[in-house]
Image (cartoon, rainbow, N blue to C red):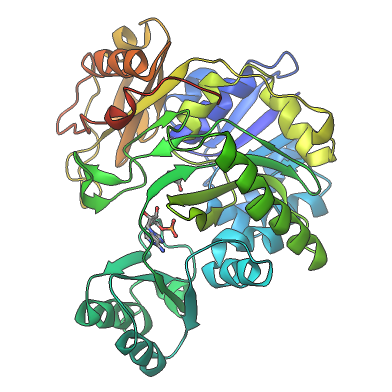
Length: 428
Ligand code: AMP
Ligand code: GLY
């Protein structure tokens, strides 16, 4: 089968790499891809948001399955377009992808189905939002309703900060149309956990758990990023929480969607805050996480292609997913200045040496090839993953591999998975 992966990040490199291992995978295409995906298959110069061109390419080239990486094309209805054209696609329809593309829609659904989440209220008028702030306790979380590249969440410490955040979204339109409505909610305390579930409309299967490091610098300081590293399994999600998550989140969510006539087929990634009172949903994502995918897929023993097809066909209940019991740690190498302004075009040294180490995978994100040399082409450049018998071993291996790589301005966090090194690997 010919497979098309849409996107160009580390997540898409990991997806293409894992799909390629399927005995039924023939040729892999990636649109637009990066220097890493070009090693796994063939890059196609179509941007991830050019929906008609992607559908045209899939038709012309008899693509048997298209896998969508990022959220934007899903929110724009790529799955609906492909299905209308008779093309097989992995990713939810636009109506289901609203769980991610509208935080207010997701909040309303959670409220209706009693899914534990932070208390909050939606606003489109500045005065009403300001009045709510006057009566609130702090810190307070202010979220743009729509997709804002992971930057649409502001934690305000007092009323003045909250008003500035509200003004920046509603009046100054900092996030454009994504911020014409906003959600104001209570700030939860606890530890975060990234859960991934394949959902086939009726059934779901959990993938391995993971934890992300969102802040740019060590000790969880600096601005939020797309994610500076991750590890799997999560060290804060045991069997009891898993049962609670099934009972209080997944079951009511799937029932609620069905009652509203919304069919979710694809990857659902709830971001959770594990609090003293149990799990609380922070957000729903409708696609694989980045960099979570770079630690989850190297631990997956089963055939990913078969799992994605079972998700589309509604036959996940017949599937058992097998995992490598070892832990995985990934460290993201970013361009100098990221997540703010950064330069690109820097030659990257040491890639081959680094990737040749035992149980190490170097996933590319913002890279491209120029005259035979791999150069930087984005903010997050590489995700270096290693497996190990313990988190500590995986972590040591990942950092050893990272130390072989160099490019001008390269920065990365030194404390990825540090808080979990003492954890024994239990479950997945
Ligand atoms: P979201 O896009 O909704 O997941 O928000 C991005 C990040 O903001 C989350 O990963 C959390 O770190 C933080 N966050 C979001 N909502 C809350 C909340 N209600 N309380 C505390 N932190 C939050
Ligand atoms: N790493 C978080 C995300 O993919 O949204």
